[in-house]
Figure 1 (cartoon, rainbow, N blue to C red):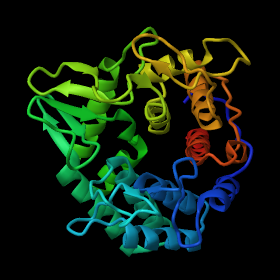
Figure 2 (tube, rainbow, N blue to C red; figure 1 turned 120 degrees about the vertical axis):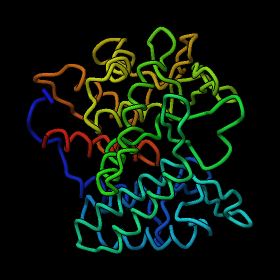
Figure 3 (cartoon, helix red, strand yellow; figure 1 turned 90 degrees about the vertical axis):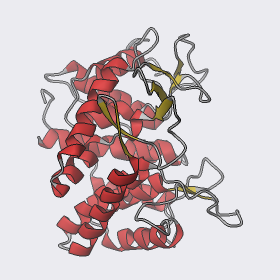
Figure 4 (cartoon, rainbow, N blue to C red; figure 1 turned 90 degrees about the horizontal axis):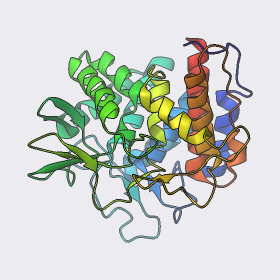
Length: 334
């Protein structure tokens, strides 16, 4: 990888313990403290994966039990994307979120291997098969991962969120299923990211629209035209999945560091106007930015990433820190 050897401060278990203490309810629900205390399939996946990495089997079982009881859809193995604790009922939209399903499936397969528990593996692969059946789409020359089973495909366009392409999860699940379609989704996503870049920094948007007949790309309508809180995960996924030399990683690192050493990283930018957020990046975005910078800079580069504790009470920021630090440890072991 061309990066300096060594170990980032702390361990998976230390990071997980802080995250678990702040964001995991006793019943196994991962709480988005910055968003009316809702829960998402994405957050349940982060929790499951964090627990596996930390060898916290008790927490894993609690998170899994709550997820299955509260979010599992009745007719397949996927999960409703949001749980609102004060809602009646708390789940009003049974559409899934493919990033959450990917994380949950990946965590289950990892748990099955680590703890020699074949039922976890089988459940993870059942999720992956339904995700492939309902959310993989062949559009012209590309295979795409839809953000959900419905609502993102119209007669003349398809809307995707490229931050949902969690490369190490795709790679692991594809290997387990022995299905080359998963590799095709990965490769086509890497190619699409080369093209789907906008504005002075040539960054990917949070949401992308693809014309069904021509394959033309544009920033999706009905969403803010930004590189922001969704798209921040794109360079994280690229680095973690072994594509740290991708042009998007370099572009993101250039954007986040363009103000010079020690200057605050911008939280987001409008595409294509170049208008910057009026506030700095949170610790989670900084963690991904520093990881991206290390991969861009190559030989001898080191990354001193924020700690999970520095995210204070921000669920999403803390999750990004935890994931970025896991990715960095994995890259150092390569």
